[in-house]
Structure formats: structure tokens, C-alpha cells
Length: 256
Ligand code: ADP
Ligand code: MG
Image 1 (spheres, rainbow, N blue to C red):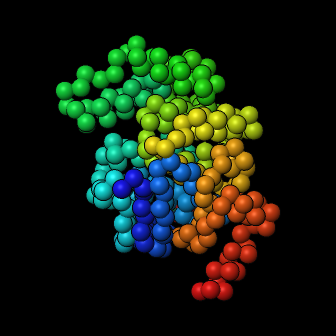
Image 2 (cartoon, rainbow, N blue to C red):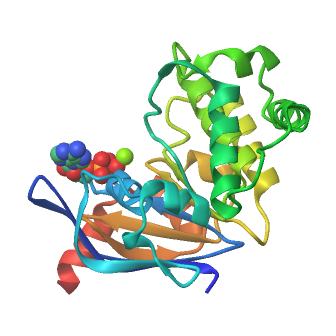
């Protein structure tokens, strides 16, 4: 199957249940947005999809390409084609942006073929240069330590650069819009739009509708209290921007 399937996902952190039966299907080639109030479990979903050890899955399943994703380590999930752009990227002093990305590419190549010698330096440089131009990044950026002293916008661009270089099949962007001014937001969105295609499914997690003006979602999901409680077209995002989340809360409570 070429879709990411999340079924009845229950996740706890330190014994507290955060995700409470979440269902989601993300086909390759589509862009889905998840919107929801703060503290509702959006990042918990992102981390759980990637396999963060602090998040304990107590029930449910995650499937991609006929594989039980929950049985895989984070690096194996990456090799399978899942990518997470962090809400709060961590700094790695001593490791340059270029070296970090090259190591990740080579690790994936070696996982597929143990004899692989890794990407040629010239070829790698050419690709990085191309993608950095796309994201309007200063070439000197590649030689800086990853996220070390980066501004908010630089961190988000670095995440999208990694995505562009690793060519995932499912990309999860966790509040990639937060901390970006409007120019940076446009550049990052353009980057994502250029990478979009039949072989990439994108999950845009956001608190605000703003980024969805630039990355047009096929489907918008509303998450509340650890579940997807409403799904619709891109007009749902505009409706939320105007009316907030309260009407959904009332609707859900009314049904419940
Ligand atoms: P969102 O991304 O929608 O704002 P999160 O997934 O970050 O929500 O958080 C959901 C809930 O889980 C919040 O109540 C938050 O305090 C709690 N939480 C998140 N991460 C941790 C953690 N590492 N330890 C304890 N509680 C956490
Ligand atoms: Mg979050």
C-alpha cells in the first residue's frame, strides 16, 4: 500500500494518555493538514510516527508500504521513507549541515546496499547547491554547525533542506511555519511545493491557517483532545481561522 495508515492510535507520555484513538490515512501524492489547539497532541503524533522512545503506544497501529511501522526503529522508519521536520530542531555543535545530510544519505544508501560507497562528494555538493538555491539559502550555511546559533527561520529552512536532500515519501512538517516571517514562510512553502508530487505525501501540522495559503492542502483535519474530530477540504482551515475551535468542541461534545 502506498499510504500511511494510522488506526486507533493510543499514546501515553509518562503514564498520561495524550492520543486517544487517532485515525488518519495519508496517501502518497496528497497534502494533508492537521490543525488544532495547543496541547492537543499534534507533536505527540509527529514524534510517535517517527518513533521517539518517550512516547508509548498502548494501542493501535501504524502501517506504511505493507510494514508495521511500530516495529521499526527511527532510522529504519527514515529508510522506509518517513521524514519529520521538527517543531524545535536541536543544535548539533561540531557537525556541519553538509556532513549531517551526507551521513544521513549514506546511511540510507548503505541500508539498501551494504556495498554502497556513498554519494560522491562532487555529486553531493551539486545537489546541496541546487536545493539551497531553491530555498534561497546562503551557500556558506552548509558549512555551519547544524542549528547552532541558527535563527528560527534558518532552522526551519535547514529542516526543509534535509527533506529536499533525503527525498522522503512521507514528510511530516511539525509547525514549520512557527517563528517564520512572511518572506521565509513563502520560501519554505515554495520549497515544499517544488518537492510535492505523486511520490510524496505531506502532513502539515500547524496551529495557524497562514501556511495553508501557500501550501494548499487536499484535506484538512482538526485534532482535539488526542483525536481527529473533523476532516474537510481547504475551506475548513479558513472556517477555523474565522470561527476558532469552539464550535467543533461543542459539536464533538454534543455528539459525545
Ligand atoms: P501540541 O503539539 O498539539 O501542542 P503536544 O503533543 O506537544 O501538543 O502535547 C500534548 C500534551 O502532552 C500536552 O499536555 C503536553 O504537556 C504533554 N506532553 C508533551 N510532551 C511531553 C513530554 N515529553 N512529557 C510530558 N508531557 C508531555
Ligand atoms: Mg506541537
